[in-house]
Length: 299
Ligand SMILES: O=C(O)CCC(=O)C(=O)O
Image (tube, rainbow, N blue to C red; front, side, top):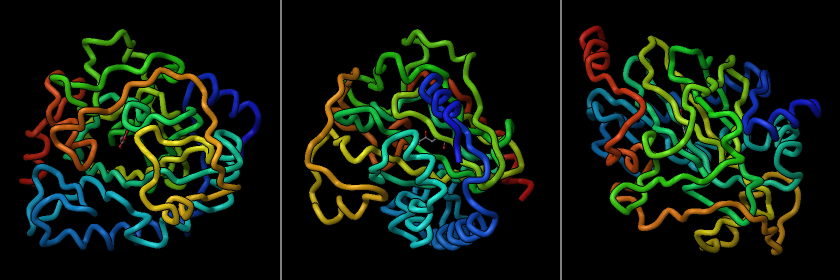
């Protein structure tokens, strides 16, 4: 699926977009599963193990911000993580042996889908080596207007910045307290069925979706099988091994020096990055409740 120059681009810049990783039928199957899951949020009152809800959600008019573990919630998402086209890209960018470390779908709904403040995934889950990335499967087109994922090129080779507020992990960088050129950000755009790849240390975020089009993004967090999560050993060994999506497991972690900050003490508000970041005082991305309200009135 990708050439050597794509691998070099990823190593240099810390991100890559690959078109047509999934077929139209596969995208349709994932979208149908997502529609089913979102419909299940009717009647849900508060965030739970499956749903992270928009601030404007009501049980009568459900507004889902994130499906927390789609692989657990619907079999199609586990199957898609193992598709040969995706594994072929991952084996070049990460390793022939791969573990699915985590998964989620950020819906970023038309008009009101929430922004995600700048952060590095590495600040959430540092490993023994940084052959770790996130795949964004575009379940619909990502356009400049619908709050696409944005990455700071080359930032995966830089420091790990503080993601703390008042001494607690908050899952976001303070844009005024770090020496980062946010104007250099690149938007990862593409058609449904394409995938974005960003390195675990790359600084990334995304703006509110003020367009009339949803931006559903299925995120698979992928680690080389020999990258072990520094936050602790697996509680359930069988479950841990069931997440191997290619190659062989190993009991020999590969250790490579990389700047690490641990995400402790844990966030004041836990459950999702949106909850973690809700305590942030100095925001980069505007959230315009007027846009959200205007769209409410139009609905
Ligand atoms: O959905 C997005 O735009 C950003 C997602 C992200 O970075 C995350 O959930 O960690």
